[in-house]
Image 1 (cartoon, rainbow, N blue to C red):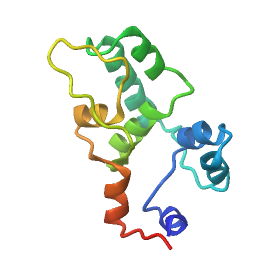
Image 2 (image 1 turned 90 degrees about the vertical axis):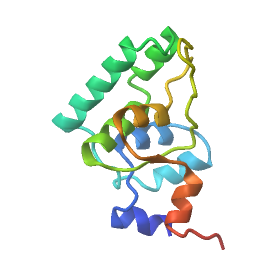
Image 3 (image 1 turned 90 degrees about the horizontal axis):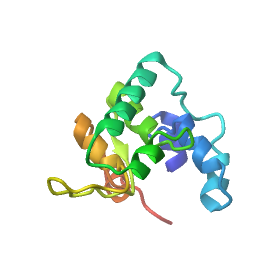
Length: 139
């Protein structure tokens, strides 16, 4: 069923996610390597501009420590590209991350996808919600 959703374009894998996951050495990276050629490019001027805006926002946001800012801006991390791509193409982001519930003045050590989606007004859900929406079943 997952392969059909990817093939139909209902579920997409951007190039940055493909690169990050396929670089690993586990079952998930092995599966991701079977998806070679199905990833969508993020090398589009509008996506790149949104990515830059998002990274710049995080760099100036007082809610994150230096480590979080540096990690979010790293070329090896797909997270900001996921959010930027979803913003430009009006997509729903699926993630296993849960949002930080920071109180005023608190500082986080990690920038989380759900928080960035909330900031930009992007719909975001967890994996189980997506599976329910697509009526996935396990045999």
